[in-house]
Length: 289
Image (cartoon, rainbow, N blue to C red):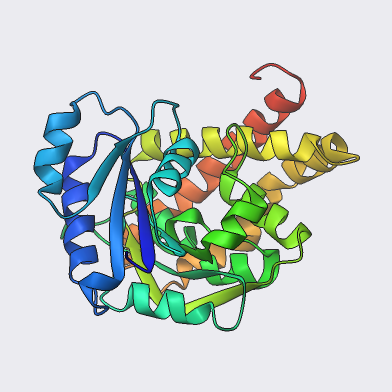
């Protein structure tokens, strides 16, 4: 039986799933040491289409409940490894990702690896792409400063996962799971050399959809804490001011190619923070729940 199970949730993104599986099957770790389980969230394109793309590189399981969390839970339930590694179907793990992530567990109970934003075209970045290139997936800060890791780059033992319990629905699942893990006494670590790439959101519509989901999930988590609504309101009211605080990150970013990309990224920063401001007030007032 394989020592490690790699869990990949998927929903209707065959091109990126194919790219992810190509990266996973090219890992430096011997293939006999790990299995890949693709947990498909009932993609409209159908099971046969997903199986054709998998082409024997992974085992397919179907997750009837909607959401990446339930898909990950279904993947874990169908897997057999004593160690678990989580990534997403639109991620591209680097060659040593799995070996480095598993090695990090020698010094902690669960670990998050380094995330990088990868371009999917050669042309100039849109505003959304420029924004995410600068701000998205700062997993080192998440791990070291906030005590959680994104589930696109998470490593733990099955014993830890079973003790913490499955990913939840309707909340920020990565933050919630890591919070429960730390509350149970488990230590988080940062696996700097376990690198996975993730594409940025391509346009404003995709970016807004992402943050609409994140805002709703973070609001639900806030309500679970004492004084959570007031803290949510304070955080929301500060969002417009954060534009000025974070603008230098865009203007000085070496990842952006020219002034045009910086200008589009800055405009998207302002647009998103003001949108989150109004959306956050709507959530607090019960308008969008």
